[in-house]
Amino acid sequence: MSAYEAHFRVWRGDQDGGGLKDFHVEVNDGEVVLDIVHRLQATQAPDLAVRWNCKAGKCGSCSAEVNGRPRLLCMTRMSVFERSETITITPLRAFPVVRDLVTDVSFNYTKAREVPSFVPPEGLGPGEYRMWQEDVGRSQEFRKCIECFLCQDTCHVVRDFEENKESFAGPRFLMRVAELDMHPLDAAAETGLDRKSTAQEEHGLGYCNITKCCTEVCPEQIKITDNALIPLKERAADRKYDPLVWLGNKIRRRGQ
Image 1 (tube, rainbow, N blue to C red):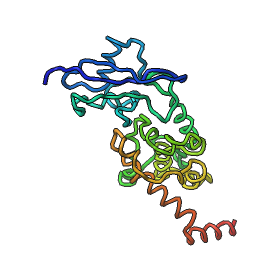
Image 2 (spheres, rainbow, N blue to C red; image 1 turned 90 degrees about the horizontal axis):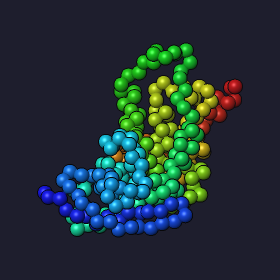
Image 3 (tube, rainbow, N blue to C red; image 1 turned 120 degrees about the horizontal axis):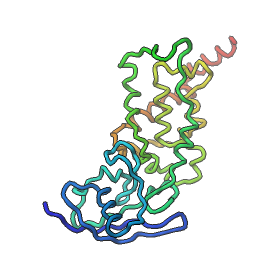
Image 4 (cartoon, rainbow, N blue to C red; image 1 turned 45 degrees about the horizontal axis):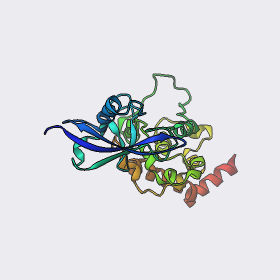
């Protein structure tokens, strides 16, 4: 296929406001949207701000919205669009704009710090951990996360309700809680930390209504909803509402 000219609309502006600007730019075989953004910088808009790093779909830096869908610019091939289609690129809607396609994603780092880290088992030192692969298989999937925050951006709890951000960690960090809760060596419970309870009471698990929009945009194909959020909800509900668990807790407290 030969080169052709595509119509792009790119959001330009900052925290004080902005709007979509039209560009016509050359597209060549095999290119991705980030290639076109770089060509725009080189030929028509040298001050266009965009965040990127690896250009290989592994750093999560070039997150933006293409035709309204959260995507990685470096993993979105131009071949998925019709030649006659207008391609609109906008910044992640859930986070404050810094300039052009760059947003302030510090909300996510704040939430990351609120999740208590792995608690090593007492008596085991570095290099002494031993686990069966079948015991770590479920949570190992979540380690593929590149922290592009597309799941955070598309989650309507964060995207549509700014006031929820204080009490809701979002799918990426609820997945982190689920990962730690599934970890065969995490000794949080021995220190009095109930990860299932904190997921519900401190990280807003109850806000999630499992629409699976986070799973749909994940570039690593992590099944965030089915393999992390739903199982975490089930364990949190068992912990809170199962009568046998309630009775066991009552007996334990009485015996202390």
